[in-house]
Length: 311
Image (tube, rainbow, N blue to C red; front, side, top):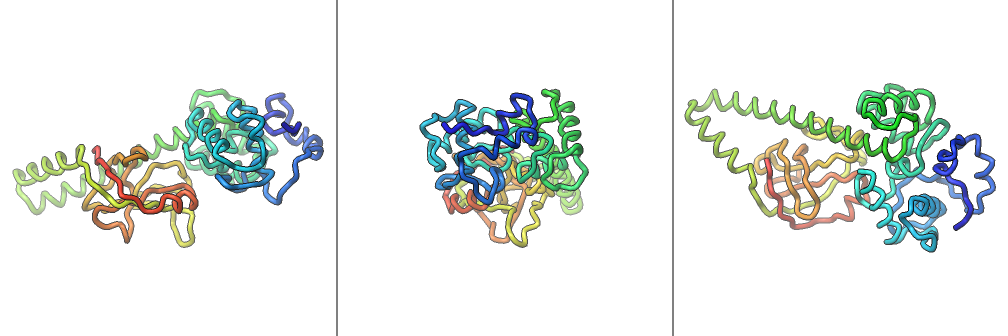
């Protein structure tokens, strides 16, 4: 392994990255225009950023030294997935700003896309109200401290795996609460409309039928995937979920006449999602699964899957 100091190494020793900056100029690894975390790394990528990622994974004991070669291969993807699973991050085998930020352990003086992602997540939870500029300064440090206090985790002002994992969990919990409120509002609107058109006895029959149909109902669907990171996309779902601020949200777009908005839906081979969005092309037995990046949505393609509406 090349003796190249990393951010995580200096911070583990208690030395700020900027104070140790002289050591980085001695690195034998070639430099590219982008720094680690500025862009997503996935299978097939070859660069010095991949080599830096592999060194971080090797330090975590997730990758053998012999596999540090600057090429993002299956071994590297598996190591990334193991790290994501261990720290409760989104498990996709792609090293984006979120995963790389957790690996590097972000602190004062750091900058770049991982810091920007950190600021967006802190902002979505109400801990950061300054400009999202990708620079880890005093305001970001204070926001991290406040978040760590609220989650009863290690309070050190550094954004590492524990803090990033807690951010994912907190955002998912917040998202579930918003979706539940949206579902309750929708149910109230449906009830009001039914009251105007049907008798009390008819309302009870309809509600009973809808409840039994939605619980445990299984159907075959045509599944595609989409991303909020595209030209002309607002990034906000039909139920008000901001996907750009919550890239780890498990959300699908549905036809509300087939799967009610707010439903929990188990998708064959992919986990459980919330029906929180709609789409012009999503009609009948079709669903569109949200992916945090374009490459994931493209590779998903079009699949025939079985889904179960749980509630």
